[in-house]
Image (cartoon, rainbow, N blue to C red; front, side):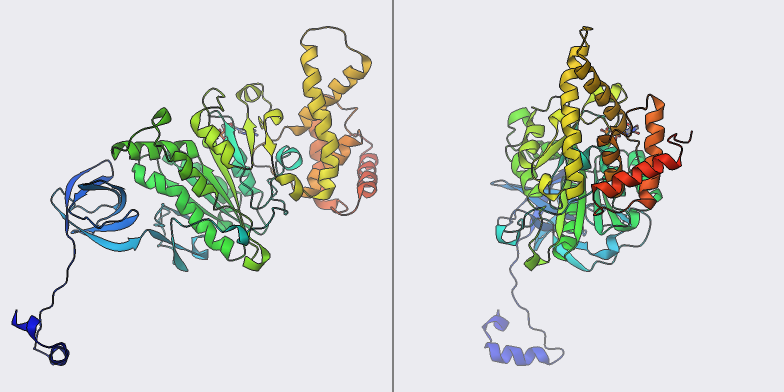
Length: 497
Ligand SMILES: Nc1ncnc2c1ncn2[C@@H]1O[C@H](COP(=O)(O)OP(=O)(O)O)[C@@H](O)[C@H]1O
Ligand SMILES: [Mg+2]
């Protein structure tokens, strides 16, 4: 008490002299852990805690404030040491959750807090970025006008995607959603786009397979994989897509183009529901908390194309959502359809008939990508798409077994040929020259005389030539036609077996 009454000036002087200890008063709140379980901590006695603030416990464990009750607060465990038991002390840190970001994260597999999972030393962050930030303001945004090529024969021609677009991949389990997204990442090899692949709640074997696929395709060096495995806490699963987005944001604001895959947001919504129910928030439709729409919209609003004045970077998002028995009108799928700029719908019926990739073109749409499509490809693809849509309508009549007009029959024959041409193996993305080559060849009737397996052989042979010996994207239609004809004549118009 005597020390407190001493005048401040004298106190400051005395502090400088060693041995003259002067006690001071520091006020801080100390809470107490009431309960722990399922990755959640309940704490009492921290009345000034704020949402999204980090709590630190006596043993060094940390948690993120997620729910403010009148007496207790609920927090998501971020790291758990052995000493965390009921009764342990808890302090407020005043910090928000952030993770390290930067180029050192390329080629790495990390958890949602940026900790390495690939057995190598922790990546050296260029700086730290808050996990939750506001999306770029409207002034900082620009129109989507540059293409993001996925290498997929149907997507790049009929459902084109632009840099900065959010394109949903939707379909039942096992219809090839992840394969399509992986191919889009692999197509960025040798280009200027960086990739972030977020895996939410997948088995370890699936995670290892994905990372191995990226490594073998030679694109792991331009990618960062963020993983919240199936066995981790719902809290980390909930944070995973935001961590991926934060890593991508650093590159976007640095003027780079980034592609982010969220695989998948159905499991993310489930993790969020689990978390909310554990924290005893009131459940809404399908037991999801009321703000699940806001959760996904604030994540996807952060993907955009920045204006030149702000560096001109972009973040393209490919969120994946899983439907049950093709039910796209369920809660989470409809939410995501309304948040994104289009969707690629994968149909289980097509998949079981062996039409791969199983993209149902009549239910897929890209609302803004058309402006970003390469002009040469756009001109050729328009004619092809018309043929294909007409064919799908006419094909219905063939089921009745009735006799058809000769004109209709020709259209159906050509449509079947086109469906054969649109089939594509996994891990074989096409370059833009190859896309143009097959489109021109189809429109010019180069495949019309082929039947059965001959189609695929002739196509493979054409694509191999186009990759190395094509006249270039800006060469014009005539140059391409001449080239394709010359290749045909060279091979005696008979593709090699
Ligand atoms: N274009 C394709 N060609 C051949 N097989 C494919 C193709 N796309 C997907 N598959 C196969 O379909 C299965 C399911 O694919 P996956 O991408 O895991 O589906 P989802 O992510 O929708 O559950 C995998 O075994 C994959 O190899
Ligand atoms: Mg999948």
